[in-house]
Image 1 (cartoon, rainbow, N blue to C red):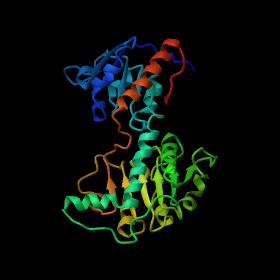
Image 2: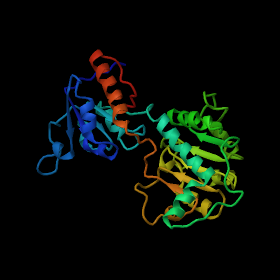
Image 3: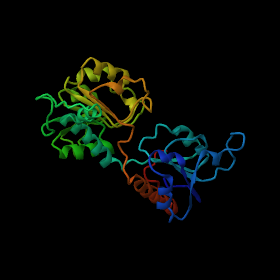
Image 4: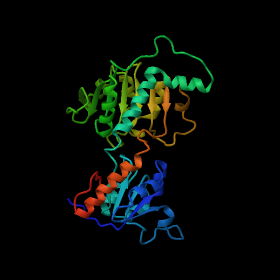
Length: 321
C-alpha cells in the first residue's frame, strides 16, 4: 500500500507543549517542502464553536486528539500510544494515523534503570528524608546492588527492548513476556503470556511496557500481584489501565509486594486523593519516562521521513491506521 496522500500545510498542534515548545519543532521542520505552522483549536472552529468547513492544515503533529482531526489527511502522534485517537473513525474517513514508536527505547530504559537503582540504593527514601531534614540511614539489610537481580518485562517491543538493553547492562537478568514467547535479543528468556504468573514469580522487578488494548486492559491485577514475591516491586512505564490500580493499592497496603514505581495511571493527572501519593515505597512520576531535551528532534526526524515518503508515493513509516 502506498501513501495515497497529498499535503500542502502541516500543523503543529499546540498540545505538544506538554512535552516541548511547538516553536522548537516548527524551526526544526522549516526546510520541509510544505508550509509548517503552529495551530490551536481556535484555528479550527467557527464563531459558534462548530468545526469550520476547511481546516487550516492538511495534516497535524499532536499530543492530544481533537474532533476536527477527522477532517485531515494525516495525523501524527508524538507518543507511541494511540489509544486516545478514534481509529475506527480515522479508518472510515481515510485519515492516516502514525505514531512515534521506535524513539523512546533509550529514554524509557534509562528511566526504568533509575527506578531500579532508587529501590536498590534506597534513593527515594533519602530524597523524602531530605525534605523533612531527617538523617535516617537504611537498615543494614535494606540496600542492595543490581547485579544478580532478576526482572520480568511485560512487553518486548521498542520500550521493552530498551529496558532490557539498559538494565541488562547493569547486571539485571532480563526475562520477557510476549504473546508468542519467541526469543528477543536482549532477553535471556522469553515466555508466552499464558505463563505470565510463572514468569513474575521469584523475580525482583516486574516491569510493564505494554500499550493499552482490549487484551492488556487490567492484565496486571490481583492474580499477578499474588504470584509476585513479597520482595518484588512493580514498575509501569506502559499505560496506566494495563495495571488494575485498586488491586495494586490493596497489594501494597497488605505488603504483598515491596513497592511500585509508576509513570502512568488509570486517571492522569493522578488524583490528589489517591493513596499512592503517600506510600513510602511508591515512586510517582508524571508520565514523563520518555522526556528528553531532544524529543522534538526525534519527532522531526519521523515527520521529515514521512513527508519524503508522501512525495515519493511510498507507504508511511509507523503507520497505525
